[in-house]
Structures are given as C-alpha cells and as structure tokens.
Image 1 (tube, rainbow, N blue to C red):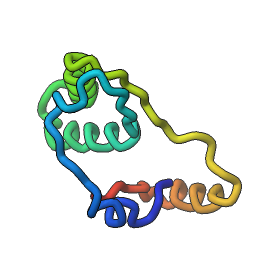
Image 2: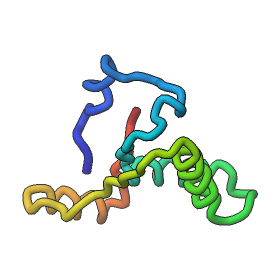
Image 3: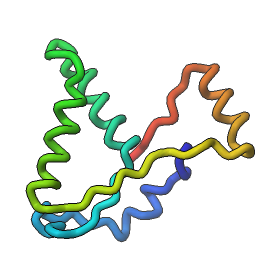
Image 4: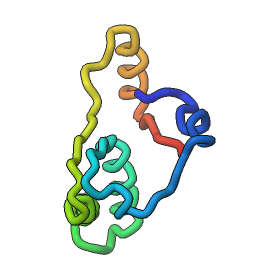
Length: 101
C-alpha cells in the first residue's frame, strides 16, 4: 500500500548513477514498482505484441546481470490487519494504489 509521500521525503538524497557503478554489488529492487512502470509502457504500446512488460523486465535483468549484480526482489507481503479495510475499499472502488514519483 506504500508510504504516503515517501518519494518526496527521499528526493533530497536521490542519486542517479551509471549502471556500471553497481558492478559486483547486491541490488534490492521493488518488483511492484517495476511492474507498474512496465505495465504502463505496455499500455502506451498496445499495438505491439502482447506482454511487452516481460520483454522490459528481461532487458532490465539482463543489464544488471551483465555487470554481475546480485538481484534481490522485494515484494509486498501480507496486508497488515490495520490496513485491510482500506485495501478492500480501494479494491471494491476499482482505484489502483498508484505510485507517484
């Protein structure tokens, strides 16, 4: 469900690095963020073959493997009881828990 305004809070310590700076490092990747990004690309290229997001995922992984990164995917765990009612309400309303950057 995310942390409200997390990316705004972290903006001041954001760094953009060339991929080769991650060579031989362990990299943790929020898989749900990647999937949302890649599915949005798929929607904008709907005239192309199906499952464009899988191709995007493959190429991202290939790039990390090429510089010998160890990839650790982070995924959502179980929904805490305190957030369950909010999750159900969003699910029933059809709204997506979007990621804003």
